[in-house]
Image (cartoon, rainbow, N blue to C red; front, side):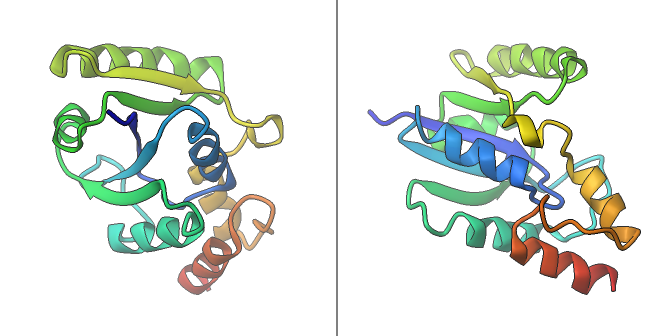
Length: 159
């Protein structure tokens, strides 16, 4: 039986922090599904299809990673794809309380669904999609924060 994990999020836009966690997750799973949430309380800059396309291109060199969307409960999505593990990133202590509650709820909804928390590479600890969007909106340089194809998409979207 292969170890399948889900790395869920909105990825709006995908950052080098996301890419770091995707690639590092592959050290302990056989297959990683990057699950892009379709319905979210967040308003997004990029439509879900474009986020799927961007992430798929970023990880196109890794056959063990697939990118797909999901709608509804993460626990139901995990069950539908046979995943027993959720990968989540923790940038700061403030992230832990929310992520801890979500991990416990997901385990309650899908018995045996475990969550693994990864901390980002030190140079990416501050990075978030919302910060990238803000810097890009204000015409700042995001080249060290995102993959070149994401930088290009941001420039096209924001002018």
